[in-house]
Length: 345
Image (cartoon, rainbow, N blue to C red; front, side, top):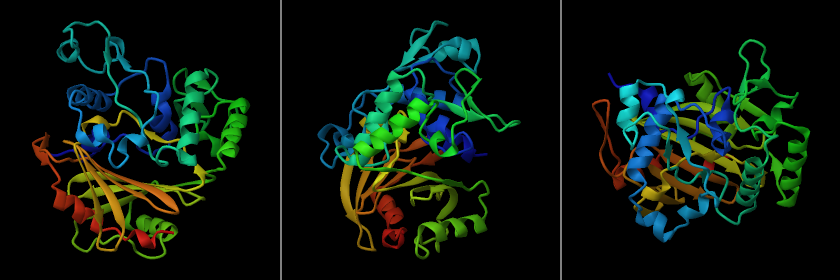
């Protein structure tokens, strides 16, 4: 039986949950960290694909490279001590075929806030550089299920009483809060503000979510090819939802212009993208479309928001759990036609 959750978690580079921050920001950490089985699969896929440099990334014709972090995040170290499998499995994936530590070369992180030289992008880059240079800040935060207190997931130490609105940014001190405002003011931005989470993925939740982000229904779901799950939204109208296009998982991220959002998609296989084109959908919106062998992107740099849609299927067949995933150009364009971006708030 095909496990959609396994598929989503293996290829999802950003997921929102109670510990959203740790999923979003943890790759800025310089410390060794536990690698889950799904992250390990993604890491191994990264090893296999990093050698194939696609034309979209190399030529940068439509600016895909301008979404990445200028300074690469340090490579991930995989140790047998933190490996979730057996000795045989570790030896099998280790390039040296031993139980010694080995390094996984990481791909660039991808920003969801905007292209290079935009205030949103520049602020996010500056914040990541600050996090990488400061031991006092935290890159992996979780919430204690019993007490509700915030915990540094790298050390299991409790955090100071940091207001909820700063948790998204990885702030672990008053100094960090001050720096946050300093960077926002420098680039003429405001913070995201209050976060509204959607834990239930029922039909009513989607309708409520859609009413908050759009003036009217903005997705055509009449053919039954798409399903939607609201994730979170901010008071500044930035939001994320996810879903499936047939069996292909996708994430829809919208960052409101004028706001400071440091989120990155960690270890995104951007160097494997080999096809790119401009597409005007049936609603008249001009979009940038990109494809690699296992992933696809849709980008809209609108006046009010920067929108990024990721689909975890590309222009070559990917076999997973006896299931095949692939999106042709026409299929990706059909998916883009399902959205009337003009109806978003």
